[in-house]
Amino acid sequence: MSQTKRRHPPLGLLLAPLSWFLVFGAASPALPAAAATMPPPPPPRQVLYDPDPAICQPAALQSSFQQQLRPWSDQPAAVQARLRQVQLEMLQATLKRCVSKGLLSPEAASSLEKTLGQSGPEVVQPSGARP
Image (tube, rainbow, N blue to C red; front, side, top):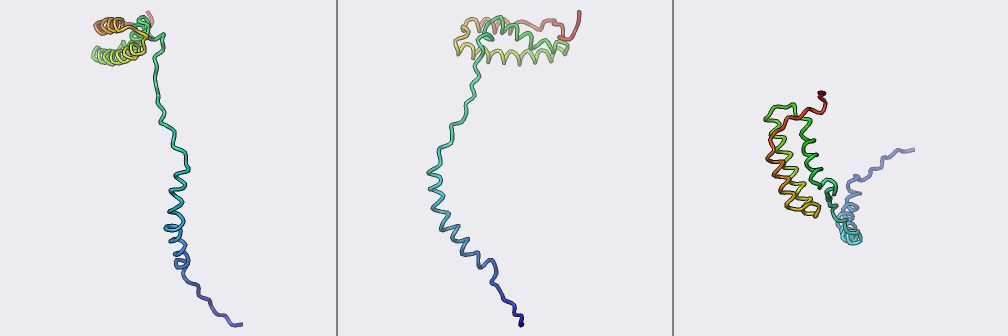
């Protein structure tokens, strides 16, 4: 038996026509057709934060304002002043939402903001302190 080696052409030469067909022949017309049959994406989800009607009561707003400051009552005066300012900013945003939803009158919101904004730092026992 004689052994003769068969030479095969390089794999790249065999696959070149196939790759040209995929790139220019078959793939191009299929992409627009596939895109046309796909449904449109859903609209982006909107997150709406509606205030709780019970929170928009002046007594509840005043109570929660004081409760948020209570855990830091043992901090220096500068820290308490800054925390009070941040708390007032959050209160203003809450009051705006309550007024815009009709859960609080603009006069009550203005009065509450003035009352809590003008009240200075008060002496409050820390939440974990005992008398």
